[in-house]
Image (cartoon, rainbow, N blue to C red; front, side):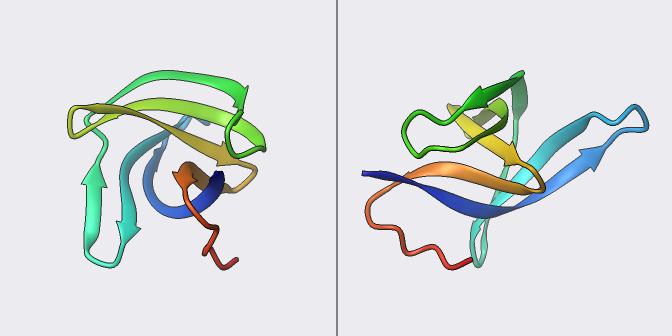
Length: 85
């Protein structure tokens, strides 16, 4: 089963209000740079629930979705929800 895993992000906030993700911190010592932002649109997470601004990003050659939900970032994660917060 999928769940929302909230993650720490490094982002760039542009003067026009655009927010671009630069890197995701998955766990202590695991920082992954966003190679490219492919698409940005309002969308729901069909697997984990919730909605927000969905970013389709290329990270280490793989396309992954990141969501900005109000003021928190999440990814769809598999397994038991061990997320605290």
